[in-house]
Amino acid sequence: MGPYGAAAEFHDLLYSEEKDYASDAAVLGALIRDVRPDARRVLDVACGTGTHAQHLTAAGLTVERRRNVMRKRGVYIGRGAV
Image 1 (cartoon, helix red, strand yellow):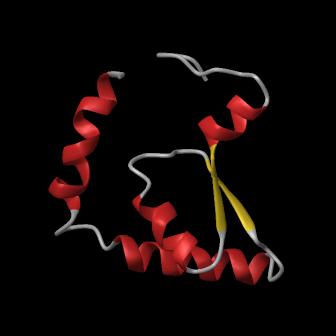
Image 2 (cartoon, rainbow, N blue to C red):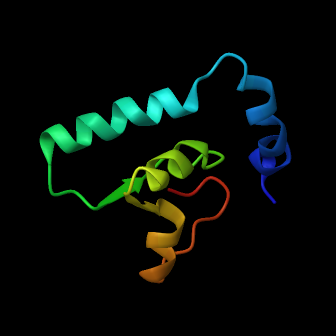
């Protein structure tokens, strides 16, 4: 587990009162649909804790996370790698 992994479990607890993940995802989903009405999949390049991805999935989009996409291509991301 990298340095962020240890803090990840607390991230959403710390920001849950300040950050409206559902609203953020609704705005993002609307922007995606405006640009690409036929969009079915999106790529989550930041990954984070996956909370936005959960809301986007609930809105009917398939969310591919960067690490998963890279693993499918045989590229493994280590600490400090892009």
